[in-house]
Amino acid sequence: MRKIVIAGNWKMFKTQAESLEFLQGFMPTLEQTPEALEVVLCAPFTALSLISKNLHGSRVQLGAQNVHWEDQGAYTGEIAAPMLTEIGVRYVIVGHSERRQFFGETDETVNKRLKAAQDHGLTPILCVGETKQQRDAGETEALIAMQLEKDLVGVDQQNLVIAYEPVWAIGTGDTCEASEANRVIGLIRSQLSYPDVPIQYGGSVKPSNIDEIMAQSEIDGALVGGASLEPGSFARIVNYQ
Ligand SMILES: O=C(CO)COP(=O)(O)O
Image (tube, protein in one colour):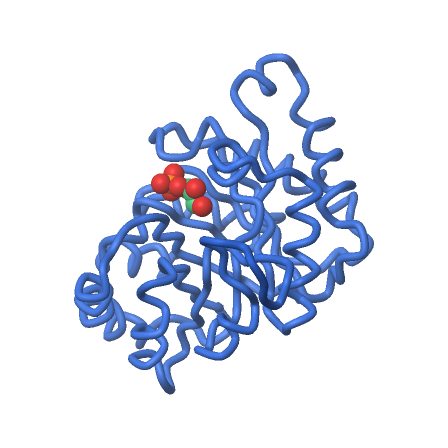
């Protein structure tokens, strides 16, 4: 059976104080959440250590939003895997479209980051997805196939989560139709050597559409941006029907 993983990607939001305030509202809502569901919070680097201390003993897993491929070195502004594992981080987002678009992330660096994360026992959440322009040009399938081919060279698919995030659906309120997300995720799965990789959908996931998304046969969870910032809204998402 494939694992279900719902992760909040807080992006560049929340100070330490705001993170604690979130936890106070969110943690009590998890009592009804099925044990089989993995709930992950991918917080900014500065909040990880404090959140880790406050998650102690809870079922929520901690995630980071990026990781460098070297264990240490002269890489100003980067964070290495041992710095994350030391404070209890278990997951890390790699290759988010915002990293690819605004910070020059390439399939080559994404691949290196994936392998470094796994070498240190972190589970990477690899993000793939097409832009509006690519979708309109009918290039969705080819683009995603190419991203997977390049990003996954030498990557252990048994310790991996993939997030299908159509770039045009991120932060726009313009969700991809659940059936279309299901179709693309099925195509992604057909390209994997290990078919039980959990594959999430990401892009304007909200309390109002999570039930339909999770009802799809190929979709194993969600990577949630804006709607993960407020405890009540993220609680409704992880307690999907
Ligand atoms: O980029 C995302 C998650 O990684 C999606 O963001 P939104 O849920 O805000 O559209």
